[in-house]
Image (tube, rainbow, N blue to C red):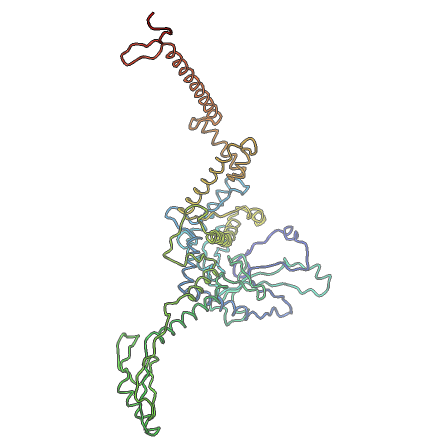
Length: 550
């Protein structure tokens, strides 16, 4: 198992023969330097340029991260991606889609928890994610006991990207068409070169070769195909940041030089010769000009006449025949409070970093109301953070693969079938997620209520559960079992019984209404037959027709 300074896994021979030969080289987006070996005396390749370029780029990225606006944007991204909680871990493994036994799942969860404790992810997740985001790459050396590999990974050590580089070596050079057809690009040597002194001014062979499987290597996924260099997410913000810094510097210089008012002294020198006139002008200057200088380093005011200040007044000689000695005032700069250009480049910087520009204003409150009130930029930002999490999870994939193979839980061939079904569930911001889910569920229930009159005519229950509520087949089965248990235990009423009870109640209500109606009719009829009672209690009978004398 030992190879170079590390270890590597070998697949069975029949697994290696599955790949058919092709003259087209596979696409590799890991930024590794590829070269073809040839000659008897070993290999030669000029990697100084790539090494130097990547070294300088990492230095540039780290300098950019020290800028206040960039640091604020990075912190927004990291705080959204890595949510810390006192009780829960920032990330958990999800094996719901993995078709293995429960015992194997328990072993995988145990080894994953061991890996997290090994690197201290629960406490150092923020720093790890920040390193990966800024540098655009993350290296960890998997330390094992080569005499006892079954003990698994003993330690995970962080490796500075400025000291390590991945190299890919192709072992033969095709010359004819037949050789191109038989060329197997799968048979290449991949390893890492590590130099504790850094790879800036060193040659390609001056370093320690480490086997590929002994290093966990995660990139940003952004590759400059022209130079074959992995870029950071900060790369597209380099130009905008430089522009912002230049605008800010020029603004400071302009404000310092134009903010105060300065005086212009026109000194009458009469008919004095040029030398005498200049001497007379210097005497007047030394007599009236500002002699005190403020020292910004010490905070003191000192007398320093030999240094010229950029805020000094102007002294101009004037010959006889002019208007004599005169003092005028040069006004200071106007519109010094205009910051539109600064705000423009700040907004552009945030857009380059994929952070919503609304977060630039610290005093602006974030409204978590109805879904229609959530800005589209926030939704895009959420998707961007999800993509970052997906890419960063490749680190867990590689470390977990090594640990499971060393412990004998699975084989390298088994991992190829399992890796696509292993997911990682990151912790979300509880308040925002809960409010968002409640709002979405409320809107769905309103839609279902509006569709209820059309249920059975145009829509079915299955359609509502699948398309409106978004329930999967597994969720439907689980919910059906749970609802059946709740009905049998008496926690809830059977919906069919509830409908029957509602119909019976409506029928009873109709019967009662009809009965009340009949009773009112009978009462009115009775009162009409008996006549109307007067206030004294006597009844009035209708008057008889005819003359009243009879």
